[in-house]
Image (cartoon, rainbow, N blue to C red; front, side, top):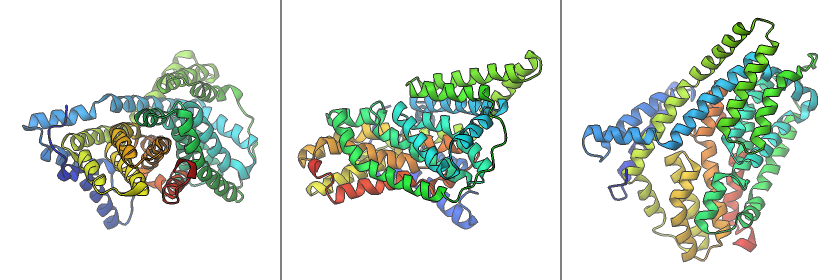
Length: 432
């Protein structure tokens, strides 16, 4: 459905209510993890339908449902279902334990944190997607946290942070494609600018993990590594790095856990087969809350877009731009707020890209740096919002609140600081 209203501040009311309910309730309870995020989304979704300008009630509900059921939301739901099934079946057959034992035997204790971060950076750079990286590595991070006593949200945050390194830089990332296409620049040129901004952030974070890893002492590895049970993760990582679609990657992972489970179960085939089905069912139902949040967020954000909330933000941010520094800051703010309202960094770039291009032409900005700003700030916001796909799926796999992960997201915040400094100090000078 196309937008039928002019830019409208009141269209942002559901988002403001969601953030207010979550914050106020958490302060009253004295615990940011006790407030159910599903309840906050339910209230804000009801408000979104109530204030929408879509006509009669049934039409406004229809608008909300179309937002909840668009192709991006449905793709996320499919990934969540498959990820839950794979994570649980891999755990049931012992694939997670085998992979964790392998990691503990290969990596020195002091390099466990840094090694996990490097693995997340490398895989995300290879496959161009943060979601695929999180799905592949989060179960291993959970196992390492259990074996070493490292705080679970902290360990999961390492994977989430590293996954955005590649999502931001990779040539095959959808954010890279969207940012370069909307700004009419070559991917390799955008990569050079982006590289100069975010690699210092990655190096700083890597040094932090090396330093913090010095105090880690993993238990002595006495268990023999069951190599056959590592195969599901080798398949998942190998096909992901090869660029296979994430849904096919997960299906192959689920199938491999079933085959290996039957081979190693020590029981008859029928019992092992139904145990495999049972593990899949448990994993899928465990993603129920995650799917509910995704659907409610999709419907609410669509009503905001339809009623002119995003256009209001765009019009206000671009009204008083003066000078190159101000123009770059406005582009950064534009894509950040759009991402906050859409919970999808690619859509945020596509939505604001044409306006960013117009600002760049008006103030003679380098389109390579403009593309880098769009990509970097969209990844920053996507990496820290508790209702984004990445934090939701990581939290769902780990069985923790997405809010608990945010405080340990060193890389996204450091990347954002470096990107902001690049605008303020006009770096890199050649592209500023």
